[in-house]
Length: 404
Image (tube, rainbow, N blue to C red):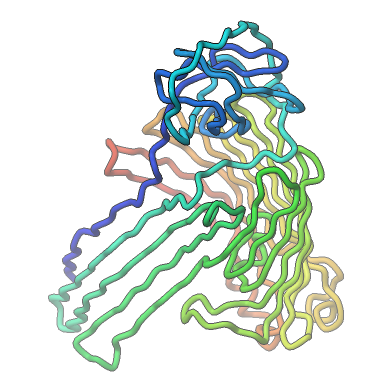
């Protein structure tokens, strides 16, 4: 079979550019001093975002301005800013020149792991970002089967932050595809909506929530659902939450209202040093078909990021078997999956991965009538290894090995 594949056209919706980009010049116990001032367009009251390694540290307001420097008060805020951190100033308006303000110069150290309790990324009001991809694939089958088809597609990933200046944002992730064949009876459409949700994430409050079609990292084992979640920050490193809803049909963008999902979780994240971060979550979730138990399980995952060089990820799912599930499985607890994956980037263009995948089959309300022999013959477990390399910005290659 010989195929002709046309190139995919894609473009990005970029976010608005920042007004003034500068850096932290000095830090005292009560203020942060920037290396830009009135001549760069900065005025008293402008919003300042301090960031390091692409992550926001804190959001402040300009309190004093000189010709070539400015400062922000750090009252009642943790000392998390250090010299040479990046600073972005969002200018409100250009004010008339004023008398220069004397700037004191102090320098203090800050521990990298110190975090603000309500630390979340700061975005501008009505900031639209994301990506739109338009594709067109054509296959010309030169064999007798003559299995020709054309397939236009549209993919959208977009977010709209702080709608009308509020703490409410929106996010969407979808892919629309239409496969056209010579035999019209075989033509089909596939419209998948993976995410379509509104979420409330205030900058200065511990409570956040969202509703719509969603997939939470903390409850990844639950999969997608049409429903709502709520999160609460207990401290700078801990959060708890709950999620619930009904299961969608991603293939046909329909809602399967007979299947309900509920869950609760706890999450931990700590920055060990400038480059190293550890994350962990644990959740208890249930899936129910017409009020009958389909699956109840514990999901746990932990990951360690060693800068841009090293990463290790582990996740485990353990089923709790009650009622008919206990009779079908023959035990109260069943290991549903165990995944261990490590990656090391030798260079920017070469990386290696090694891990172990142990996914076992388990009964649900929909599969309870399937014979044991089919379950036993379709297990997915064994060692995994791969090497990947990148050529420039456009080409990559990967070689993978696995043990069945």
